[in-house]
Length: 113
Length: 107
Image (cartoon, rainbow over all chains, first blue to last red):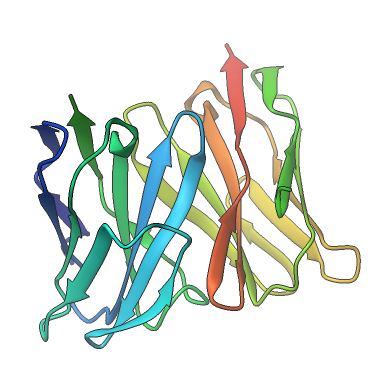
């Protein structure tokens, strides 16, 4: 089975712009979770989607949003980018959610200048 | 306030040593995960636990629900084990992470 893929792998944006990141889960996995990793805050949970519905959400502002499509692929969007949004964004897929084993993608490294 | 605390933060070991990384949490959990992150960012899930003990090769993970504590043990450590090990817990609708333990195994 192919692993979790994320596109793009690297991205440079300017403050105020918006960005969309994509995650394709392992075939058959219905849950996709998104995480942000920064040197200062470490890993933080953004949100979890299951069967096209947002099931859980972390403590992030409304500028961070996401969605999941019927084929389980997921996108996350960050609007009005700030310097502090520079981070590694990771997605993970699992069969049913975070009480199942999670399989992580390679991440998208976003740099905001 | 950190819901998940790991110790030690940094660990250097000689090849072949037995290694223990500890994780304590302060919230009720439905699952605890041990993750491994190599330089470059890729994360691999090593274990998911809700009770007891699991073993995979040279790695052993235990959890004590009453004491809200988990340990990750590496037997016969090897330089390829050098990585950051992260403890994460699922609590209700949230997911909390420890700050990680950076392990270096010297040949």
